[in-house]
Image 1 (cartoon, one colour):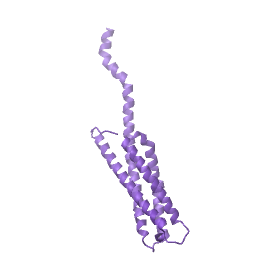
Image 2 (tube, rainbow, N blue to C red; image 1 turned 120 degrees about the horizontal axis):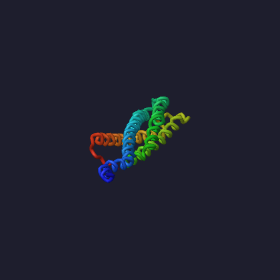
Image 3 (spheres, rainbow, N blue to C red; image 1 turned 60 degrees about the horizontal axis):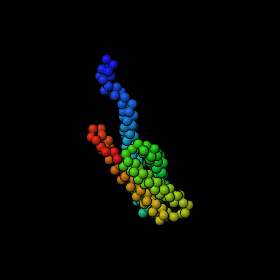
Image 4 (cartoon, rainbow, N blue to C red; image 1 turned 180 degrees about the vertical axis):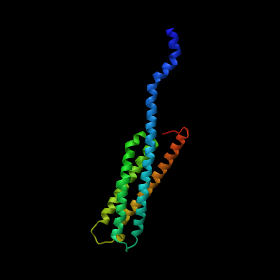
Length: 187
């Protein structure tokens, strides 16, 4: 009788024995899914910030060819760029780095690429601000170093827009495929 009980219940007992093993795996995948969704949101924030920076850098590039524009106009655009870098771009990238280990390998490398672009961008922005604040009476349109830095800010912002846009689009497509039940490789 005991043997019949064990024989009939063996599949059920085996299922219960496996339950602790199954639960953490589903929790991990749910955590990874949440990290991927957060990553998509953060990459979109990086892209939006980079677009804003690019917008202002484009204006600065145009302003550097005209001697009639005041330092105040340049400083205003630089302040907008600095605000985008400090208040939106930097926090989004910091959080992406924090959750990076929970993301697919390809996305981890993309985050590194965005981080490198953002660091170069921040360096060029700091240099442009220092040049704009320089006490020399030289107008910004005649300051070669300033013009070069503004051009570099524009180029870095364009690169960051391109990378973040591609990462965001690809991530969103993968997530949609997963939601639809399509098996998608994560590495």
